[in-house]
Length: 83
Image (cartoon, helix red, strand yellow):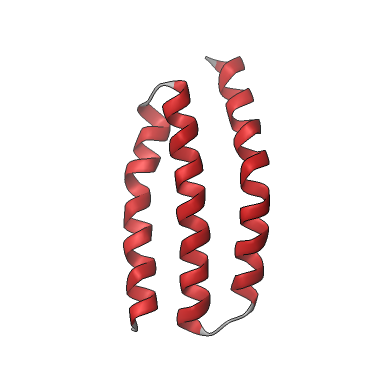
């Protein structure tokens, strides 16, 4: 286990409060927590790509970063209708 993988594990642990806030917070708090979790997921994939030396993870992180904003808008639209 190298330093890149340890940093990825730390970022994964930091996603837990975001998940809790996505379930229990107000609507805008949920949206912000979702966006923060998506940023942490992108950074985690980048760290895993560097740690394992796999280039395909860089592509996956790029696609996730591109789609994260649109998926956040869909999420907030869903929450407005549901709540």
